[in-house]
Amino acid sequence: MSVLESQVFTGELTNDTLTITESMGVKRVSVFNGSAVTGTVLGNRNLGGLTPTPIDIAQGDSFTVDAPDASVIKSLVINAPAGCTLKIVAQ
Image (tube, rainbow, N blue to C red; front, top):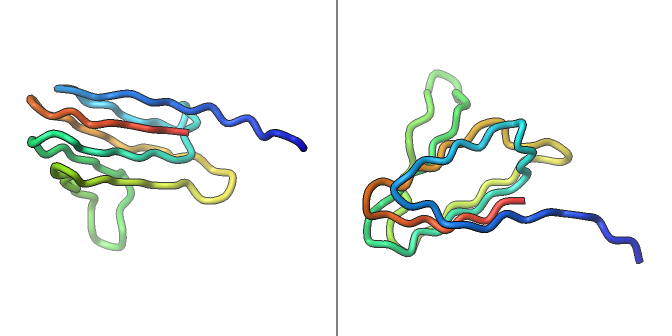
């Protein structure tokens, strides 16, 4: 049996912002909010005439995004404001 190596990041983001960039090589990221304060995620791609806006991640909510095929996520901003702790898993 052959094994495909896939490194995994796990961590918590509290009172801070994390910007995932293309150079990080992230193919999948999941964010879970277990705190009472709402966090956000923000993409960078326009869709038609719409520009991206932050999506709220309230207590008990999660957000997951996958890059298609062999690509990676180009840009994603994860924000945990004061009092918010977001659990992040990335591959």
